[in-house]
Amino acid sequence: MPALNNIGRIHLEKQDFDKAEEYFFKSLDIRKRLNLINKEIDSNNNLCKLYQSMNQNKKAFYYAQLSLKLLKKNQDINSEIDVYSMMYLFYAEKNQYKKALEYLEMYNQSKQRFLNNENLRNMEKIKSKYNSELMQIEIREKTEKVKLNSVINIAIRTNERISEPIEEIKHEIHELLKSFDDHDKYTKYIEKIEKSIIRIEEMQRRFLSTTTVHYKHYMDNTKMVDIEEKPTISKK
Image: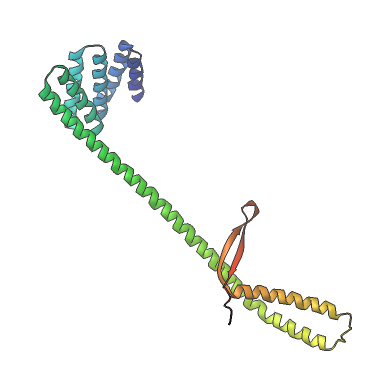
């Protein structure tokens, strides 16, 4: 059905009036049988424009009046704009300026209502988009917060679990060193172990002094945990 109407418009643009008339009437007939009043108004308007192009003003005026009557049954702002515009032009051409001004005023009112509605729709779209984006940001922030809290909890539990065995190892090393001579060949290996333990303790210290934990981006979108330490306060 829209296809028939569109084909008619194409023929009208080509000034193939007979073909345009044929397709407009086919479209109008279907729309009447389906009781699609707004679409029927559209078909009448197309026939009005067709007959205007053919300088058959009586026929054009007839279909414009049909559209006007149908508007009383089913008001549609887009149809109103088209019909009032055509009626204004008809009366203006007949030098019936009072009537022409009436329809011009009705046209302007309908046009203003259309623009107001369009502005409201645009505002609602913008508001909806803003709320959607805001919600996505909140979800991302909450997700990141959960992840970060999880990392901190893991760090704390890990620190608690490794602290005790490290202290035991340090104690055993200390006792072992007492039994060695200063020139003992094993001393240097034990010193290496001590240095490794010191590094582990340094990692623990960093976890314990953490103020924030966040993710850093590395290669291939891989995220790694990074830690920011509390600033140290110098003693004077």
